[in-house]
Every structure is written in C-alpha cells, then in structure tokens.
Picture 1: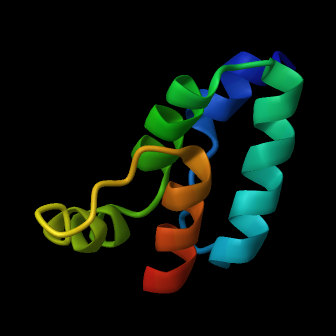
Picture 2: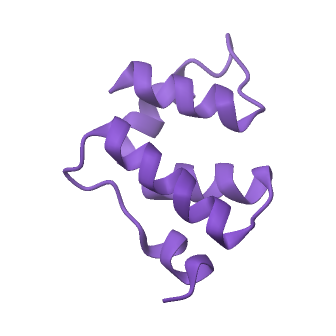
Picture 3: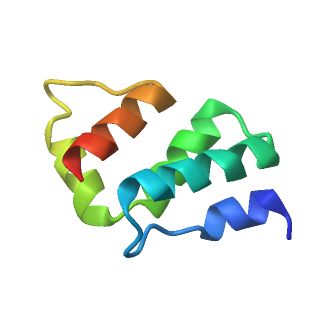
Length: 77
C-alpha cells in the first residue's frame, strides 16, 4: 500500500496516543513527506477534541514544529 495514501487515512480513533504517534511517524518516514505536510496530516488524523484543546492555547503558545505538535498532543491526551 502506498505510504502517502495510508498516512492520509490513518486515524487515531481509539488508539493510545503514543502508539498512534509512533505508527504515524513510521508512515511519514516511508512517505518521505516534509514537516509541514506531516503537521497538517497529524492535525487532521488526531481526535478533534485533542486538537481543539491545543488550539485553545494558541494565543499563549504557537506551535510551529512537528516536535512541538507531537509533545502538545501527547500532553493533552
């Protein structure tokens, strides 16, 4: 299966966040995507309540790197 297609359809659903992020990173490396694409895909595929919580902090914290997003997602979960 094409890694670029799989990363677009790989959803968190009920997966534990740490397991999801590890599998997501493996897919992203196989897909050879850049960090901006990875951040967008990560935000799209994580549960919406987690992203909403992170974005509520936006006026205080601006997340710009993939590492910052992964850390914030893990902390919220």
